[in-house]
Amino acid sequence: MTQKQEHLSKNQQIVLSIIERAKGPLKAYSILYNVQKRGIKAPLQVYRALEKLIEAGKIHKIESKNAFIACKNSDCEISKTTAFSICNNCEHVKEIKNLKLSKYLSNFADNSGMKYKKYNLEFFGLCKNCKIKQ
Amino acid sequence: MTQKQEHLSKNQQIVLSIIERAKGPLKAYSILYNVQKRGIKAPLQVYRALEKLIEAGKIHKIESKNAFIACKNSDCEISKTTAFSICNNCEHVKEIKNLKLSKYLSNFADNSGMKYKKYNLEFFGLCKNCKIKQ
DNA sequence: ATAACAAACGTTATATTATAACAAATTAAG
DNA sequence: CTTAATTTGTTATAATATAACGTTTGTTAT
Ligand SMILES: [Zn+2]
Ligand SMILES: [Zn+2]
Ligand SMILES: [Zn+2]
Ligand SMILES: [Zn+2]
Image (cartoon, rainbow over all chains, first blue to last red; front, side, top):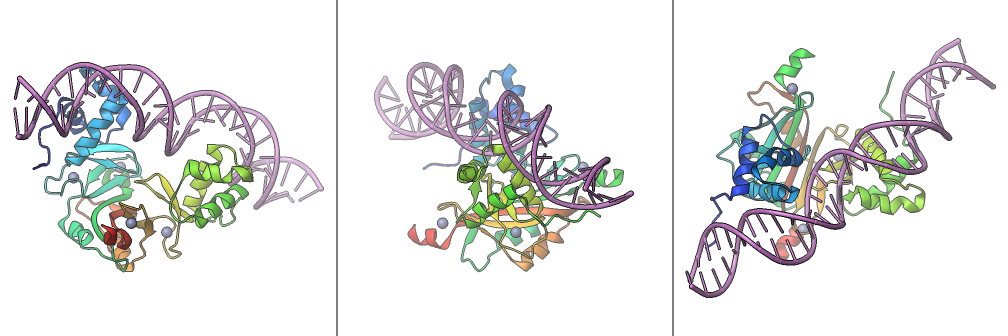
């Protein structure tokens, strides 16, 4: 009986803690730099941890930025349905938690006969702060 | 009066023609390999063409694959609102043309006060073919 | 036509992001 | 304890993307 892992390994915990403390999405090599004092020396160690953390639903990858952010949406299925708002100016990223949206997209079906189990949506615009300043 | 460019340069035309003839999304270095006989020798020449073609709405980038596909949706705003279906098995990618979906997403607003001008949505699942085979 | 400007080009070098391959150490299960 | 699975450490390399520079081509306005 292979259950979804819930115990995080040492490296996974280290990488997760860095991502959780960050204000915004972190890039892999920035994570690497941050964890070198804790014994993680090579890119692969970071990428391996990132892979497992994504599988576990603890973090998400922001595809348009090649960066990683902690999941703030404890309800969301394990990394299967994700939506983010991204500010084009200050690069602020926030995970969107909206039941209507997630229901709409989870139930979406077009004429292709394809049933989608997973999606990633990235919205771009100006955040409230940046809208004011401009 | 700076209008949106509609005349494509030589390199842009070459790169676009490769992408349009392809069955699926192409990677930048695969494009490079394909156009070397036509005089394009360096990655930067390809990336520059790709950038302009995206701005012109002729192609889109599939972010989860770092690959580029021709736009099949002449109605869509210039690369501003994109949705794709991606088969996890055969990697078949198709641009989704669905007015309800695009209206829903273009009008989407959450409580953040952010108004989104642009989005990219990638759906994942099994296409009809691959569903049968499994 | 020609000067002035903007866009595209060619080229070299380099930055950034990500994975392959292999052996050792640790952890979970029977 | 024994065995299998996972995680780790390490080196090397693959894949993706941009910086910097000078030249060439195309457009616009006199
Ligand atoms: Zn989440
Ligand atoms: Zn902002
Ligand atoms: Zn399109
Ligand atoms: Zn398929």
